[in-house]
Image (cartoon, rainbow, N blue to C red; front, side, top):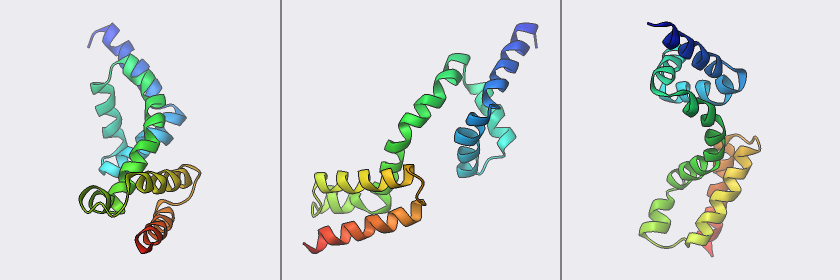
Length: 127
């Protein structure tokens, strides 16, 4: 490995090992993917260039609400209730997903927030 490549790898490692990166990106994703933290770190160093690494944390944070809403959509089976059966309107679906994702972003446990979503969904289905 030449000197420039070693320096680049060192710079990438410093970014990835920063506290916010480890807490916000590395740990959650490595746990979700069931990959050793060091292995995942090495994968990101190998796959991402410097500009991608520097821009990834803000993009990761901005994508978080959308990812949570997609998970809620699947977990509440809105793909069936809204998309297939059409017994939940798109507006009702968005309202539930927005409310529940905001609860999760504000620190509520996902499973507890999902229970709130189920209750909201039952109200809609009972109308």
